[in-house]
Image 1 (tube, one colour):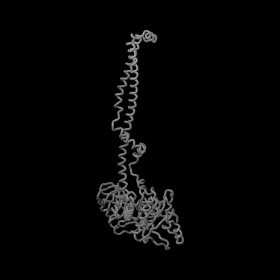
Image 2 (cartoon, rainbow, N blue to C red):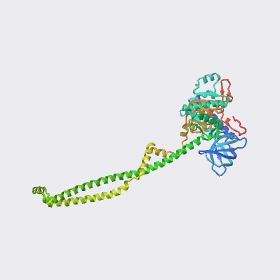
Image 3 (cartoon, rainbow, N blue to C red):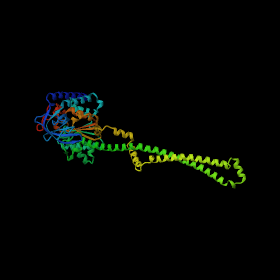
Image 4 (cartoon, one colour):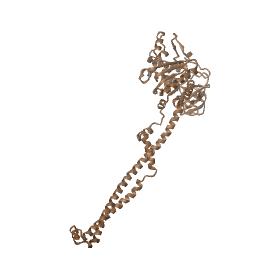
Length: 500
């Protein structure tokens, strides 16, 4: 069987199980006698619900919670069991303690969405990375005995690897060592386990291994859902939650954004002020230059008057031949007096213009004067704006949507730990590719969910689990695991059962 055929078959199986879920009442409203708030991270909240016996619940499916306390309904996901109570994750806080609320699961919608996802993988392979996923086909759907050995022998161990073992601690030691090695090679890893309790424990073990290897586990490792337990392998899991980390990151980013907006607004406020001051300074310089030219012209005319006064004072003592020369040039006593009057008139006109210029200078000085602290502040802001890419870039940053970018945050994480149910239907995982897929307890994961996770992987898939969980086929070389989704159903915290 080829991969596209297995995808279509798995999609059809999910649609068949959707009909089973609808006929057997998996989406029937569930009465919750009591629910209590466990905690929150970012905008998500955890609630512990006490259920009636023999209640059938499928994990990782979306649900709607009707609080019954005059508050509006909220949506969320069913995570699993913890200490005999069902743990759900909601998008809103609906009270510390709830009495007689109602939970409405959406198993049919979950299966329908999952079937559409697998169908897209089969019909639109270019939108996914299905190279490593093809290597899973001989394991998920074994061929006749004569072909199985040859098919598996052709699979390069660098593409599909197996780590089987009965002792989980030994198996996890190998897995965490492999994870540390791949992180050092800058690989992006999708870490998967069938249920939230297992993935919580594996996340703690991975964080502990990263810490022992002197690697920054808080920035490298992320647990997608809210962890059910507070601690695993001595590591606090609440610090590794996706929502908690994203909330803290964007809280700091928003704080920086507020500071940046204040700086930008102040820069935009000072820019026209200093531009106005600059224009007024230019006007002031021009008027001062005009004043200097007028005063220079006044000084020239005053020097000419002084020359006339000197000539008139010394006229009687001048020799006759100099007087004759002056008269010939039109400078006798009468004309010199007339020139003096003309020069004085020129000086008076120039002084009137000087007075006008000086009045204008007095008006421009306060308009052009920059306050003592304004220029240094503006220079600092201008340098900061330039460092950040200019005002256009900052406007784009500030005008960006206030909603957090989950995809960008997820892409910055080297290791994402989650369950296959969330990978199947969460649109985030369709957009974020990974280099490695590490699946623990792989035989406990239904084929459709495992295929959905493998469609995100570009390089390598590592399957791990207990050998006893494998189902032996007709031939000793044929091993497989259950292909049903409803086999992950939990009937009650005390009596978990599987429904085929």
